[in-house]
Image (cartoon, rainbow, N blue to C red; front, top):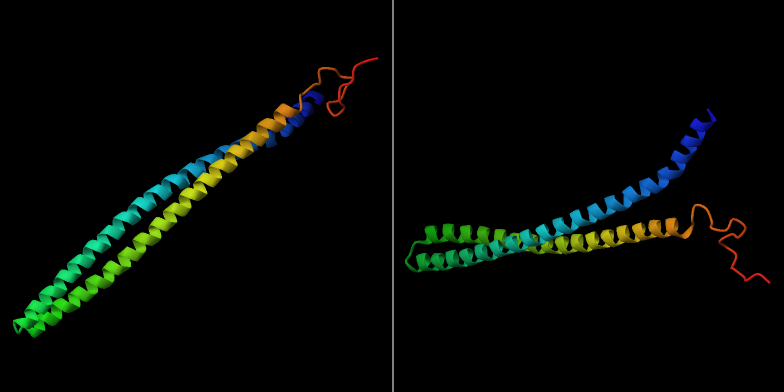
Length: 153
């Protein structure tokens, strides 16, 4: 029974160290994931922004077409084309704004991922240092690690 209780006590003492090691790994993985998501979001934002700019160019072409139709005397057709151009222009402006916003979000996610990875590395370092600083059994049991070594006289 005594052996069993000692085993349980030893397991409970080692649990926090194992859990914190897992925490550092999870933080690191989360940081990498956020960084990848940020890169993807930035790329997709740039693509969306370019798409909005192309839509804007198409809307300008429709506006020119509406002017040509108006000059030829086709007022109803010109009005219809002009309304379509206005809709397309509003959509293009919205897509450009969304693209810019997505790029900003991507940059923020990347920075956050880098910070998380840095925190994970710092946590791993702290764990490694705490375990390395206090040996399980001192080399000389008569001397505690807190007292400086003085030569014997």
